[in-house]
Length: 324
Image (cartoon, rainbow, N blue to C red; front, top):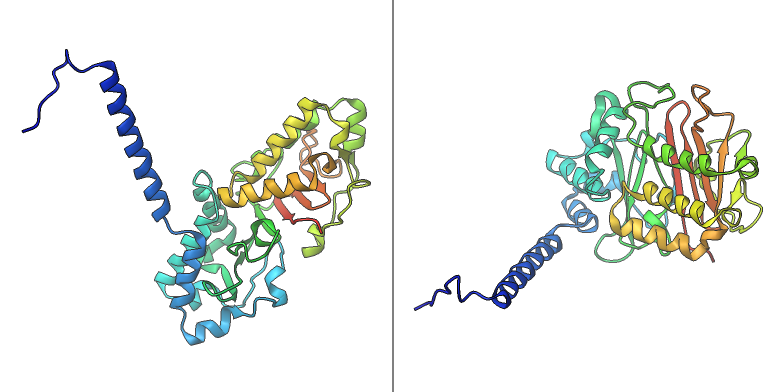
């Protein structure tokens, strides 16, 4: 028979012990649920297992195929979109994979971006490809469409954040968004970067503000130079501790849309390349609305290029890879 503890006998020690036990139980339950959630990699395995022979002929390639590392602002890695190639449950698997590659905070917004930019085709206008064999060795899943290149590789591509170069962007409401970029999923990143510019003094601004922004040329847009000096813009060595802190916040903002494992790997690689080797540049030729808010800017270092082009709408190119 259980003995009830009366309020007078229920000591502070009893309370703390009970509370600690309850908290431990809740943490364990939360960890168990998190562990049971499928990852992008396990979902890719499920998709691969579900493919018919005809579907494999369309989207499956050797791991070392040249298409695996391609990136662009508007392209389809295979000609047939998932809406035509896959059954509804397979399309749903692709959506789960895509969602899993993003943070819980931004997943819905990223899906909105893709649907808006894809027009009538919606999410089903995307095209995907699989390189290698998930679960048995090196593999990579690549998702493409307008304003979107995403990857899921289970760390098969050694030393490369996101599994290789990625692209994200958004044309919210119209092709020419205007100076406030209303409704744009990613414009918050430029607003944060411009806070850094506002914190620079006159001499620093002269170093950071350049003329024409870089051209967009697919993979060449994010080609890594390996250079620690002589890159465009102002080097971090010219910034104060407070200003460097602002730049680190911008890097965090750039990584917010992505899942934690990829964001953590990206920061680890950036740190390995040397934070003080980063350069920050803004481009005066791209000032939508002539309001002094620079729409185009870039962070570059020996092993990172993150180019944000905000005119006439947002294009973002990112490539982070371990130095040799």
